[in-house]
Image (cartoon, rainbow, N blue to C red):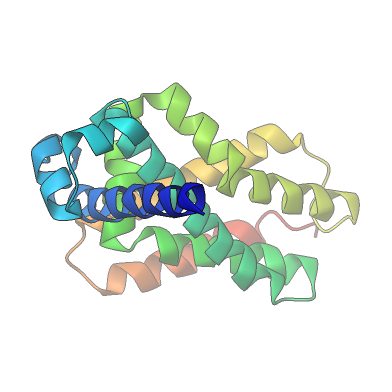
Length: 196
């Protein structure tokens, strides 16, 4: 009984650190947030933080993983609502663009993520989530002839890079019409992939 209570308390502490770390990283940016601020917001001690995460970077990595998994789930859920593989593909890409343009997502996932962890680690996390789903649907579309035969890996990286770059550009835009224009450009780009 006491072990289950302690395990539940540990998990509550971990969740509080992730929640407050995410909120602070998203609103202030990784570089502007100190560990003291995180533990104060979470209502825990530094010792409790270090029990779960050995550094601020480790906490940020856990937050980034959570954000990327959340975006991937959103994209997958939206895309999977479509029966047709092409509709799943285009809906998924548009859903990624929408999810990635949320300011709290952009800052953690696209701005600070690569800067804090480095491109190699960031790419590995991206490939394990969103890029993985993109590669799966591209493979299906190539196998059923909707898209001409291409190596899947370069196509996945090109599309993923284009959508990430578009989300970053939109993050700096003050013009609400830019999202509509970017969605239209993405649709046009995706349509160009189809077998004539």
